[in-house]
Image (tube, rainbow, N blue to C red; front, side, top):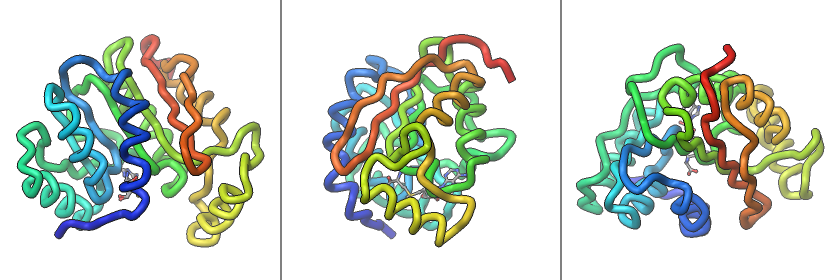
Length: 202
Ligand SMILES: C[S@@+](CC[C@H](N)C(=O)[O-])C[C@H]1O[C@@H](n2cnc3c(N)ncnc32)[C@H](O)[C@@H]1O
């Protein structure tokens, strides 16, 4: 059942290096769009004091996640939840941090809206929302590879596409998140680190 996404072997350590200092000392970390599950088992192995909740709307992905967690015998990874970020309600009531890697460009914009709405509902003030992926800046690609990737995504599905960082920040602000800390990552990706600042405005 276990699937392998080739990029994960390259990006999991750089992501963990940036993410780990922002996570709470203990608590529950919800991952949205866990995909193969390779990120969450890597993070859980490196951070045994935290509990990790994987999720994905795709049944095949959930089987892969659960298989990775049982193969690695990780006691701090819960069974994967069927969670669609764009759904009006999520099957989890609270979390201390929400992590979402490589989803908002490969899903309709409604998923980004749902992600912000759901994360704002789950997190306490000060709670972490961590995003990772490629972004345009001020409406323009920041590299030829991201421009090519954006074209490919839109060809596959017109509702997909590399998102503009400023639009994501504006959306996050509408849902009560503050100005993010942004970290340049390998292969023209960004880590975007939000904190829930207040109650939501919508
Ligand atoms: C490119 S994969 C990324 C998987 C993993 N995070 C990674 O970086 O390897 C995109 C994932 O987003 C999930 N996804 C797509 N739309 C979603 C939505 N509305 N809510 C939650 N997950 C979604 C897909 O099922 C898929 O597993």
